[in-house]
Image: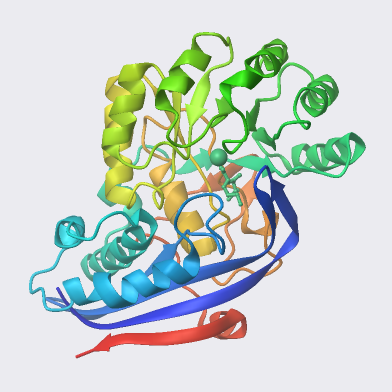
Amino acid sequence: MIITEVRLHRVSMPLIAPFTTSFGTEYIREALLVEVTAETQNGAVTGWGECVAMEEPLYSAEYVDGCTEVIRRWLVPALTGVEGLVAESVAHHLRHVVGHPMAKAAVEMAVLDAQLRAAGQSFQSYLGATRSSVPSGVSVGIQDSIEQTLHVVAGYLDEGYARIKLKIAPGWDVEPVRAVRRMVGDDVLLQVDANAAYTLVDTSTLRRLDEFDLLLIEQPLAENDLRQHAQLASRLRTPICLDESIVSAESAADAITLGAAQVINIKPGRVGGYLEAVRIHDLAKAHGVAVWCGGMLETGLGRSANAALAALPGFVLPGDISASARFYQLDITEPVEMHGGEVEVDATPGIGRAPIPEILARFRTAEIEVCRR
Ligand code: SMG
Ligand code: MG
């Protein structure tokens, strides 16, 4: 294919309820969508990508305005002249730009979507996914009280979610987890996510979580603390799962080799795209390390693509792939639904769902034409 037009759409989607983590509270999802139009052997085709960077650089160094700038000034210009462009070569054409995995992932996703649509192929068939639906986990933000936490968790369990993840932070860890475990009983899959809020000094606190039979503790220490995570892992019974630290297949290999991660959270955006995500899946599977698919409050675009990725055989734990309704009253695509604890994998051509034009227009706050041939 050859790219003929690229448009960026900035959308502002209000969350149903604020979402609080150890690093801050989200009220609105500021999302960035990449629309790529290309000429292919089968005619003109349009593909969509979603950039998962947050509004502020608190979860990762990238943030949505920065990604917009990088995509517009450096990534798109590196691709527009390329004849015979394929999704599998996007990372190669962008390799001179240092870092910016979330921006690169969004562009690669749009090209892959266009490629699959032109070929009439679904993402699940492209990936060789082995399941037609995936178990759906839900991430529960830090609440104002333990009572409120119990209420929210009970609501999600009533809805049928297959796994509960509680956000924790220093001062909000042992007691809320104890209360939730007591309420839900031993059979409910339960895990926690610290978003890098602790240091090794907190080892004794984190060790107290061992008694709650958690599936895993996600990213207790800072992004670059691979050695420290390995040290912590040797002192805890609860498996350590890395999220923020895993930014590429290379870092995943390092984490596995060091014993820093017994489990890996794969977020396609954080690692530079779905193709790198598959490489991490393959690597982890070969090493017997469990992976699951993380979430970044995606719109239906990224949410449906994540469901297809999570249908690969190495994704042995439920992902943060909830229904659109977990975060949004109205999604910009057909909503992703959860039934009986599962989200169905789309079998239609393309990497994910496409925005519905009228709804996109309603939530859009800016539209930038980056290139047109
Ligand atoms: O999309 O369900 C979702 C959110 C899952 O907790 C979630 N994501 O660290 O795993 C994580 C966080 C990152 C985003 S927090 C604003
Ligand atoms: Mg996380």
